[in-house]
Image (tube, rainbow, N blue to C red; front, top):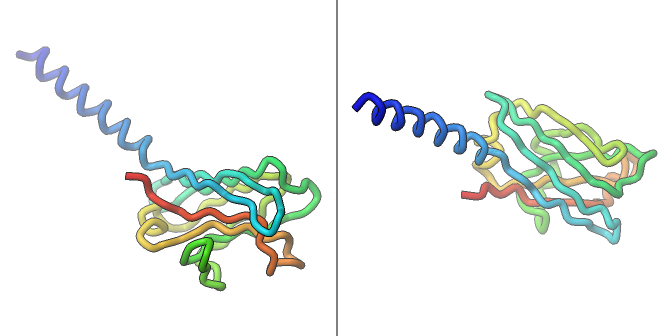
Amino acid sequence: MRKLIMILLLSGLFSNAALALDDVVTVKLEAQNNSGQNGVATLMPEGNKTKVVIEIPNAPTDIAQPAHIHLGSCDKLDKAPKWNLEAVKGGRSVTMVPVPLETILKDKTAINIHKSAAEAQIYVSCGNIIAVM
């Protein structure tokens, strides 16, 4: 009987670990305006914050490209960024967003990358943030 209880307890621990892994949200970033800048963003819960890692392999190496999370979708973004992200430099950006992942997921949101600070009106990549259930 003790062995059965231990097995059930250990099963519960491992199933919780599997659930924690499922909390990561991956966003496919698709090129816009013929930029060729496809990539991926990964959103990971970090307590009351969310770590956002953007990777765009063929991004320019010499230009910082502003990045944001906007309300809406790539087809219809709210112009004002909801959360600023670190600019993509050399194809990578890492940001700690000061809200839990659940907060980002509760509304329709998207990650948007701009060509440069000087050409912020030109979008080079975008991806809708969707929680996979």
